[in-house]
Image (cartoon, rainbow, N blue to C red; front, side):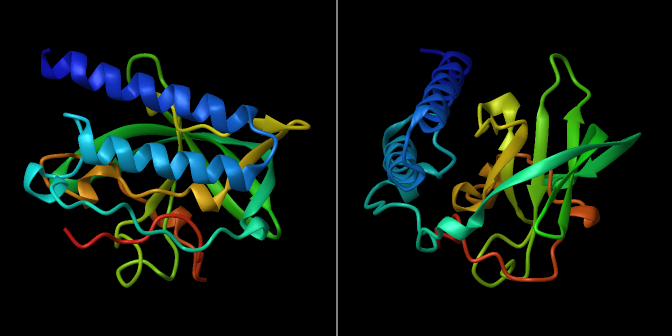
Length: 199
């Protein structure tokens, strides 16, 4: 199988996984299923973000304990469209358009639309755990191009920080990933979601 078809298979499995999560009645059980499926993909899939030498003996990705209070419903407020060249790892730059703000519990995070072919919603963030317990350049909550999408509920966007995950470039520099822009850097700790893996 070519690398392109392997990547297509990876993306297909991620899309199916998030569809299962959205359909689940119990968020914590869905999170457990999500973790187990990601561990298996990281361990065995040819397109795993882990370098091949790190897959042998891989014991699973580390996470903070599940915290139901970290699952919020955000009001999406339209924002004045603004093009953003979001810096990435390895000197890359990706063009996004800020199109809305997700507001919850007195907080706000910007939502971006990928300007490339087909588009997609992207929500990266960083918090005060970065560089110590989580990836220094931030984590992702939504990346619909890759299937990472928890959907909506009663017209609000589901943001569950328990499902926050590290970008592929945090495991191996062969991957280029957009990083969290200043507008989405939170001054407090978000002790939920994926932590750093020593590879």
